[in-house]
Image (cartoon, rainbow, N blue to C red; front, side, top):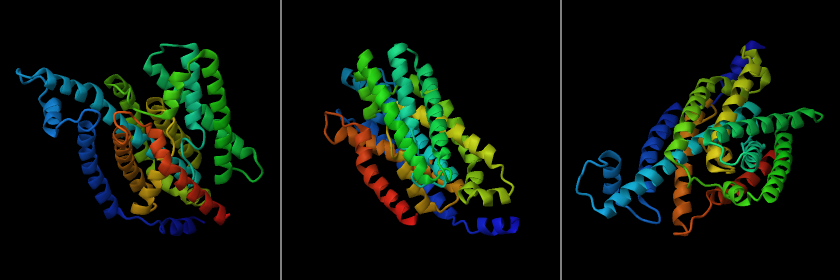
Amino acid sequence: MASDAVNEASRIHSRPRTAILIIVGGLVALLLSVALSVSFGAADIRFATVWEAIFHHNQHQQLTQHQITQHQIILELRLPRVLGCALVGSSFAVAGAIMQGMTRNPLADSGLIGLNSGAGFALAVCFAFFPGLPYLYLILFSFAGAAISAALVFAMGSLAKGGLTPIRLVLAGVTLSALLTALSEGIALYFRIGQNLAFWYAGGVAGTRWLHLKIMSPWIAAALIGAIMLSRSITLLSLGEDVARGLGLRSGFVKLAGTIIVVILAGSAVSAVGAVSFIGLLVPHLARKLVGMDYRWIIPSSAVLGALFVILADLAARTVNSPTETPIGALIAIIGVPFFLYLANQERREL
């Protein structure tokens, strides 16, 4: 049994050179996209002004009022927003990669299995019953809502005859998401918090500030490091329970650790950007196509590509219909919905 497992594990297709090129090239593209995103918007700002604001702020005594205003726009509005996009993109993408690897479900995504709606329901409760709650507590409530929702989805999918399958996982997630979304909207109507929730459901990072990044960053950084440390075990789980156990993997511990990491990443991202789906579905698939099936390369590649994807999507949201801002969730859904339908059709053919 063990020898068969080793033989099976040796068949994993990995492209480490391609992965290194993608990670390095993605980081370079990420820096360029940050500069581009900070420069362009309702008020276009020159690259030189961006550089001066970031690295030489307040060092020049003879700044005009116009230059001071531009520096404030860069440092107080655009830079935290762009960095928030990078954190959110990495979080959603890595969470999706971990879920797809652990469940062997190509349709797994934090939005499709109820994590987003669970966090949204928790935020609706906060807005209604605890108005003015500090941002740190909103994140904690998002964690709790996402965790409870994930537990319910896995329980509902497992109770059916034949156990938890990819299709059942998605169906359970869609069902619970519909219920929690309806409850959230009911709370919004009764307590008149519809505007707050409407902005959150549309998805956006316009309100991201340095305080938010200060609270989010340690959680997300720790979870990303944990995901990389867990990547080899997730690769073995993606081959199947029997293979993983044959190689001596403690699958129960790995699944628990992976679920905690997913809840931290998804809870942080949802509390910041709102109910944006499909990032965790699209990006890991692209990473697997490029770097192979080894999650030691899929996870860091997904982190870089996810950050780049959300930064560019946010830039498009700000510029496609300027000065009006298009919800980032709508733009991502335009790409994500056809891709999801394609994957669902592929999954149905394989059944």
